[in-house]
Amino acid sequence: MSIKKTAAQKIPAKILLIDDDPILCQVFQDMFVTEPWKIETALNGAQGLAKAAQNTPDIAICDIMLPDISGMEVCRMLKKKHPQMQVLFLSGLDATTEKVIGLELGAEDYITKPFGMRELRARLRAAVRRKGKYFPELTAFAPPQAPIKRKLYAAGELVFNTQTREVSVRNKILHLTQREFEIFKILALSPDKIFTRLDLTDLLKNKNINERTIDAQIRRLRDKIKSEDLPQYIQTVRGIGYRFHPGR
Image 1 (tube, rainbow, N blue to C red):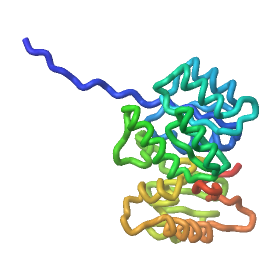
Image 2: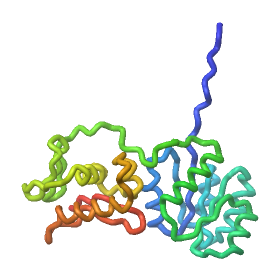
Image 3: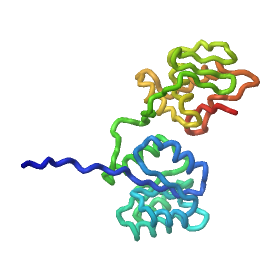
Image 4: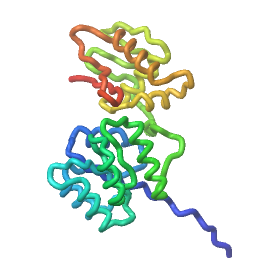
């Protein structure tokens, strides 16, 4: 009787962000929801240490300037209790002394604010690889797996028909190019979800599209949808990307 050996299933990495900026914490969770990571956030050092004690993260991302405990002290305490945990520092100060102290305390990386989400994703993926956790090699963004059953979607005066591939405003059909339609479809089927330009280029799967092309397509889409008394359906999330907001 032979016994087949199967490879051990890799466990998704647990990541904890400790930062007193609630907007950054929310964006962080929204941006990486498609990654196979379990993400938690904390708004101060004490809360971060408590969450780390309850559910030890593989990676902690810690702002140096916290309202209660310094990020340096949080790092020291985390490393003392969890030596295998990887710590990445965030800071608005690009000071060599701070970087040296942080690295000497055991931090694996130091990220200076402001930073792009594409850069942060790359650094986190590198940290995940170092931990040997599950990492998707090719996907920068994974589209929803559940099949779309509805054919008609409405947002106020705007109607989107997935079957006929038509978008209309006040019963007037908009003349969209194929690329404009595909971008609109990605955004509209995930209302209020933030997409980076890289997410959109990956989903469109077209080698001739770059981030500047995305910006131009978005401008044209807005011009075609625009009306003085209608909401701005396609919104810019500064420094990150775009989202479709259906309004009320």
